[in-house]
Image (tube, rainbow, N blue to C red; front, top):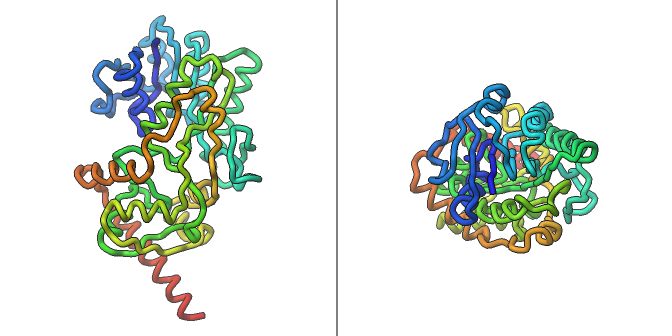
Length: 340
């Protein structure tokens, strides 16, 4: 079996590529700009190109045909339209990576299935993903274009600790605050429900859909089955660090009001996603991929991530702007309490 990855070195896709090459014996090609050669496993092949340069991509692909084309960096309709032009008649299956943030916020039920309405008035990123899905499914319905839609939620790997509230430079500054004994901001009161999925677990679900005839023309959400509150998530991280958690609760609406002007986009990432309780029903995926299960619990995955981040200086990206912003938010709310 032969697969082409558009991207292939990111948090999600790298784990899938490793599983295909090392465990399942696929012939794997990665089409990207070649910026992360260290993430390409031995045995995978690289095509160094800008996917937006269609003429160059076509020349480098030649007459190649793929059992599966896997898109991980398609965020807007023009990008999937480009893929349609490039790969129509060149693949048996095109898998588009959408997002679980495309589901309606808040949905009528916190239990999310693939039938939950797609609508997100708070996040342009999610609306773009919905538009991409609409274009691809229309091509499937009218022309038989062999699309499969996958919707990840919060998927992480060893290089970053997953959190709800952080700055533009990632999660390390929050970890640093915990290590320094400083309070960390948690959206809401920390009781809303969320799901974290380690990338190796996600890879099992994704690879099970590749070459799977039951997946053509269908959408699948791919997440783990473990549901945690944000209080439990942050407490688990603190346990892995060996420190006391000092939570400071701030409403998502307030964070959006004071964070968006700083460029943190909490309207999208919180109100349009993480502030809402969700429990994913993965029954449809498990019917198609019986091997799918949660093999890496969050307490296990977060320890892997903590150990990696603290032993790799390149992952320790400090964010003094975000750190100072947290202190200002907490100080302002404490003053408000004192004045009332």
